[in-house]
Length: 254
Image 1 (cartoon, rainbow, N blue to C red):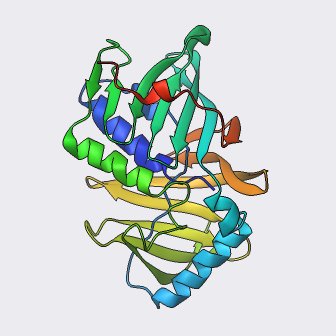
Image 2 (image 1 turned 60 degrees about the vertical axis):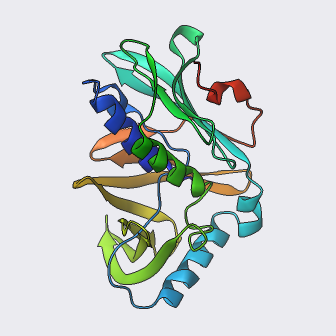
C-alpha cells in the first residue's frame, strides 16, 4: 500500500500556509499514506512479525521491492471547481504534484531528490523549499514505497503497543518511532486483514488522523483508495505502478 502521502501532505500545507492560502488543505496526496507508530510496546519481535505479515498480505516483499515509481490521479474541489491532480513518487527520491486545469499541466510541488521546490498556486511564483522542509521531503522519499518495508534501515524502531477497537474492528496498535527525531505515528492494523484502518501522526503539535475506508488490488498489490483525513474525505481515482515519467517534471525551473 502507499503510505508517504500523509507526510507530503503535511509538508505542502506547511509551505502554503506561509503564503496564506488553504489551497493545499484539500489535496489528498496518496503516494504512500505514512505508516508509523507510537508508545511502549510489548516486544519489537512481535511488531516485526506483524509487519512481515502485513507486507506479505499486501503483495509480498519481492513485489514491493520491484516498484520503481508510482503515479496516482485524484481531484480536489477548489472554490467550486473540480481540479484534476497527479502525484508521482519514485524509488530514487523524486516527487511531484501536478495540477491539471483544463488539460494543462502545472507542477505545484516537486523534488529531484536533492532540490525541493513549490509553486504558489495563487501567484505561480516558484521557490525552493527551506532546508527544514527539504529535509522532511528527503525523509518521505526514504520510505518509498512503503515505510514498513525497510523501516529498520531507515532508522525506525517498531513496537507493538497492544490492541484497540477502531470503527468496530479489532486492531493491533503498533508504534514506529524514528530514532533520530523520536517522532512517532500510531498505526492501527486490522487483526484479520493486516491492513491499516487508522493512522495517527502528530506534527508541530497538530494531530493528523487518517481513516482508511477502502482498498484496491492493482497488479497484485493492495493500495488504499478511499480515506478521510481529519474529517475531510479523499479518493484516489487511478494508480499506475512503474509508469513512464518525464524527468523534466522534477527539475527546478531556475
